[in-house]
Amino acid sequence: MIASEINMQTPIERLTTNLNRAIVGKQDAIRLVLVALLSGGHALLEDVPGVGKTLLAKALAKSIDGQFQRIQCTPDLLASDLTGTNIWNPREGKFEFLAGPVFANILLADEINRSTPRTQSALLEVMEEAQVTIDGACHVVAQPFFVIATQNPVEYQGTFPLPEAQLDRFALSFSLGYPSMDEELQMLQRLQAGSPLEQLQPCLSLSEVKALQQKCTEVQVEIPLQQYMLALVRATREHHDISLGVSPRGSVTLQRAVQAFAFLEGRDYAIPDDVKALAPAVLGHRMISTGGHNARAVVENLLQTIAIP
Image (cartoon, rainbow, N blue to C red):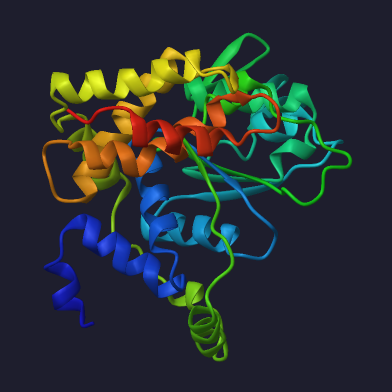
């Protein structure tokens, strides 16, 4: 595609086109990541190593001309390794703040459940408040600020499961999954001449991303659709296979995600299909199931039983 054709595309089309240059397939995953970004939330990927999580995060950062940082979470990772710390400057005779990796636009927290609860709580504050507090002083992070965290579902030794309060901070949770045969073949052909990420150029500015986030909040959600979402959320609190249902924060997050999804679809209004497309990814990780039941499966079942307005 030539440059003039790219410039004629909408901002969303330019961003999607750019990401597809680096990532083979995974259209659903790209769409969910963009929903999380444009709704002002964060994304949790539960997947095996080597399926493209880091590539997706780096490609997104390069596409929006943002700063990218990656943290490999380990049990010895300290909260200050994330947020930064005050160091003594003998020349100036005072302490100076040395910013940590959270002061980026796109932050990849790899294997987040390998870090200790204290470190996880430090990340929780910056995800929710967009700031960190060091020695009583608040330091605001850059905007937009977007966290992609990963969990490895295969290895469980040496991990510290994320508490419900932290899981609730993630707008969506999903997996990339293995590529199909054709997709993996295409990936090998692309990588034969080097990584396409190296040639990736910014297609949006950070100010354009913030403008898109604002546009998403203007998407209309009618009262019957809000009632539909609340019926779904409240049903999780009363379901016999669920010991902890979705919180009111989950209701708000679902509406924001639905607005972003509708915007990505080119509409200024939301419809029930938007809710059905997003509910498992938005609500599933916010619930605690009983008796080995799958929380996402419960959400999908409720979508089949609750009447659509």
